[in-house]
Length: 278
Image 1 (tube, helix red, strand yellow):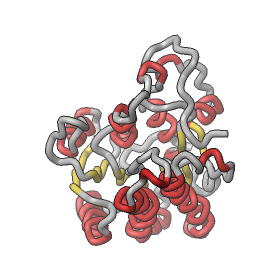
Image 2 (tube, helix red, strand yellow; image 1 turned 30 degrees about the horizontal axis):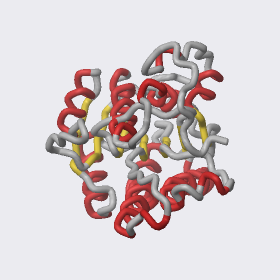
Image 3 (cartoon, rainbow, N blue to C red; image 1 turned 90 degrees about the vertical axis):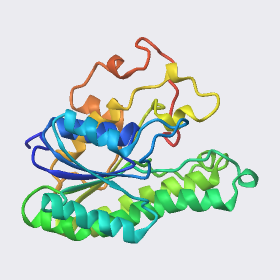
Image 4 (spheres, one colour; image 1 turned 120 degrees about the horizontal axis):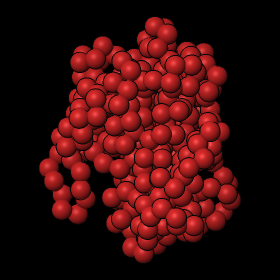
């Protein structure tokens, strides 16, 4: 299998910062076309990263960028973004459902507005974007272009300790993972791969930095997720589908032995584990 995304068109949600931006930049290094979706257009002092800045970084890395301000809870806006992508680049080969909302709160401390946000962005947004991109992905498969959907969501575990501290967030993230489970089987006949990717450890992103008590020195950088995503998205869609990959395990399977380069502080041994990995 040719391990390059050169000439492929990727639509990435939540692409203005963090893991989504790193996945886009990794694809750009191959010479891919990137359609970047996010809400942040103007700088926010509390949350660094904007869509125009992300587009500039993608083009500096070697790719072509189309930035489309989009709230993925709005199905009309998503449809317009997909239409713009197809008009600019002639189609879509890969969808990366990265956008996510988080609130690590127990039931009594989770207002329904926050519940609706997490369900709307994580579960509904992933489903909406996948549905909107499906015709283009089917066309990509017919053209032999190896189409993929990648959801940034965890392996499904019914152990109650993953639910009890933050039922709403777990439901929303598992909604994304259930899309992987179902769509992998549903789209198999089209030749479209659907997989999930999740980190073993906490990843140093702007969103993580907003959670009190997180020690960034015990995290890995988002580049580890980008490198793992690249392996998935360059794999054979006909044989690599329905998987719930863990970043370092996947990289190790492909011969990566040096994980120190991904550490925020190389040499740190007690890295913070992420949620949902048994």
